[in-house]
Length: 124
Image (cartoon, rainbow, N blue to C red; front, top):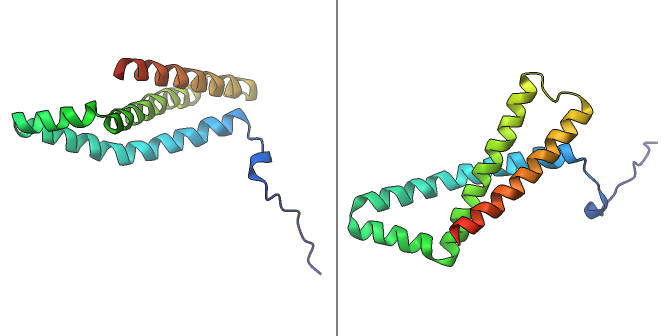
């Protein structure tokens, strides 16, 4: 007879380590960038078409949803760069220990939040 393994159906009770949270957010920011870059390229192309196109792109970014979308893409870019720098430092041998990895992940999360707030202030 095969043993039944316990199943935890309450996903909110699972506590991820800070390194896992940082890694998951790095992957999510990459997906947001993959989707957001075509939007930014479309806006760039629209703005370079003509004066009317520039006004349309400017109006889109100035609207509430456009501002939020632009903020989300820029925040994802900032977080992805910060986490990527952490990975490059770890490749160079800096922060490879367990405590170094946890401290690096905390630093990435704090810097990511600071970047998100600063970008929000800058855009609004």
